[in-house]
Image (cartoon, rainbow, N blue to C red):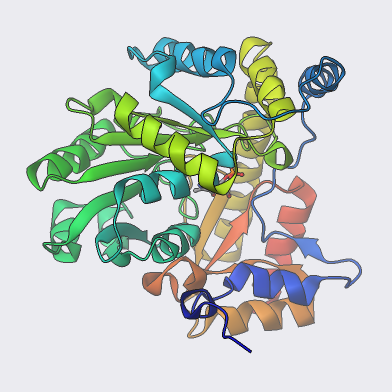
Length: 377
Ligand code: PLP
């Protein structure tokens, strides 16, 4: 019997999945481990999807997506951020994860290195490894407010480095890059001739400050933005995201889509178009709920005397427990207190000692989960 891919065998299941597997089927668990919006997809978007099905959007679309959606995305980003994109700059993908993974494959060859945030979303390292490339973690340290610094980037840099992945607002940290930090990172990439992959899937979920897109700082086509409909419009299951970049990069991405997924589902693309073109109050309402949850979590953790990083965006709170083995901590906490949270170590080497609590849950669950956490520690 031949062996399955050694590279794939070497990929580790994330610590979040391990906690989810333990929680599976156990009654009365409080779920604070996953990044799944609390809401159903808004009704007008669902209706647009249903209508699209009746109108024949049941077939393949172009590899880089339906033209009207690409145009709507370009115009939307132009309006929001004062950019000058057109549809040739947009490739529609299977979720934000499809955008990040497609872009990595479009710009990186096997053996090259990609700088990845530590702590950061675990999928970045997996994506880089599955492309046969090497992961170089750059540290986001508490002393620097968990923001990237030129020193930390320099430390992770090697002559083979081809790209840097950044994420603002951040999962798991909830940090939002100030304009000066974003500029520093793009300038660093220019100096060292790197691509910047800017994962901005939480761009509409900001509580304090404002979102600065790395795309607004791009002067020579090295910045590629990945975004998604999943979090902004509670559309995780529809699987639509996109990359916004120089036309040449989008053309390479489209070729890869042909090899891997053909295209994002046509019906979901039409629903995404309705999301962009329709009323936007749903976005603000969801953000307000996440913000109330953030405030509730901040109060509960402060009252319990537990250290944490106050999130400015996204929907997670990064809690410093100083524990030695966060995966074991989460497994025991789940067994004894029936609360599922994500172990910090799954987000990179420097995440050990922390846990991540999702704020995309019900406020009463967040309060009760933190009450049990305080008892447990
Ligand atoms: N990027 C980050 C930082 C995320 O947290 C997620 C999902 O949790 C994604 C990308 C992918 O989102 P999707 O593929 O559902 O659009």
